[in-house]
Length: 518
Image 1 (cartoon, rainbow, N blue to C red):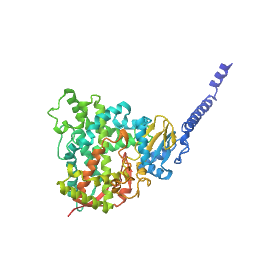
Image 2 (cartoon, rainbow, N blue to C red):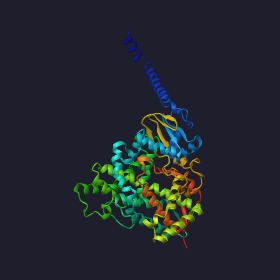
Image 3 (cartoon, rainbow, N blue to C red):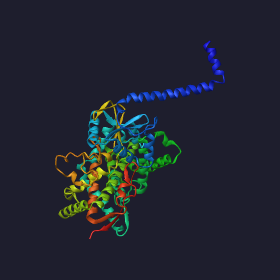
Image 4 (cartoon, helix red, strand yellow):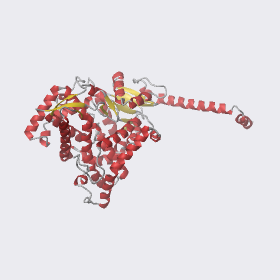
């Protein structure tokens, strides 16, 4: 009987409607189950503040709109100002805990990564590895550890003295460019600093001379504007994916996807000859090939390829792209913001200049000895990073098990992120947080000696290039202070009108009017 009834239903005109009804019911049931699971799994997070959200998509529409407008950092900062130091953003059904207390951020990262309760989120790892292939930042566990161990010696503070000559040469080129333009021309300093930092990192990693006029035998010349454009495209792709865009969207026939693949091809074509040559040197156990310059022979690429047989063509290309991106924008944009703040704070400007002049006269220039006397310049850089943390909002961790942050149970699977911009303006930690006060980093009082400095990260994942970045920025600022007076063409708006590709940068490229010192 049942089979007959089923056959009648299947053969009747009403079957399509019945199938549709069952499909709708199934979808409704799935959505209802997901809603129930979210509500119960993340019940402990319901009491935390949260921005107004869509019932199904959460805050994803606001997030993706902010990324498209290149204002994601501002959205997270604004929410931090409105909702407090700990709140929840919903990426569809997935919660993201946002922190903005410096000490809480530091303790959470250090303790969580030490005991394994927090690791880089799967979504973020996929986004990093989608830049060009498997990279250090996109790995975890044993894979991450051996990669970190391989690169760490090359960026240690003890290795930096051998880089000083290269850095000084690159900085002197920037000074000469400004001298040629001033007066009366205006100079956009952000692109200048991008060229500076890209030439330095390209020299250290790939063995490309920093001298613009020098040629290289190992591969194509460094065309800064083209490499930077390609890096910006893959960086923007990372941010979109890290904030919710699906990986498969890169295969759609749309402009973003076409630009992404073109950028990847360009970067690979730029790097492949050098990577292949480094691997050839490893396989033949030779460093005296006729086409190899001393600079390339001493490059990080050659050293890493020689000592780490696990690295192959794909991973060396990907790691090189990662280092080019990490070693360019961070320091370049921070330098732009430092120049801007110095222009608007003449007391700090004059004090910094006096210190540079004294060190210069005592040691006949900027060298390893005079650098020891430039603590105030390093304090200026730290204060710049506090106010303009260029990497704000671009990274996160994920809870591997239920954990406790600030007395609140954070369920397994919750992503944990932070707003460095909001943290840097915390009035409970930084007195007069909106003022540019480098002295706060030199004060030896009990209240200030423990000020958090987390813009380079914390714990075992702290930035590889921290020492290199500080050295570059210190030398460049010292030379500017020694040779020039300057003023911002657009005033404070250069420091307020910001955008975010992967990192935060001045939208107007920070135009500056320079004058040679008398």
